[in-house]
Image (tube, helix red, strand yellow):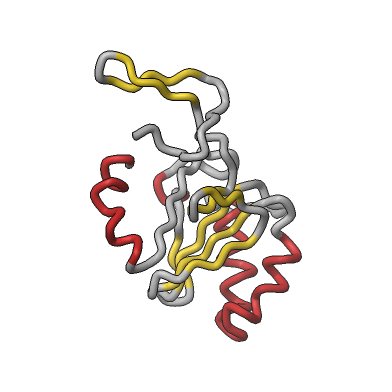
Length: 150
């Protein structure tokens, strides 16, 4: 992922970028449960970090159940702005990100901003150091203001 990011960073000035890594806390561990999922006929992609107080149905996650059963029916009728009250009612401490087909991002929940990048959490961050041309990882909090060890 880091190589992909480095190779495409110049395009980020042209449009938004959302990266989400799923750790599979809820729902069946199958490829179709990895998200973002497109919705509203490809107008948006949806990403969720956290746990929703909702009963997932079939093999879907709580995230996709919210998207398909709550968000999409409302947004199909009233638009994304009309679905914001539903988002606010269910989000709790979770974080949602929507990116539209023009690269515009809408964030809901408490994100952490560092150097113009918004993080739903900092759990990914580890202290890195370079030893003999490779990166070693140690399980202690990342202390730099810059999130990548270049």
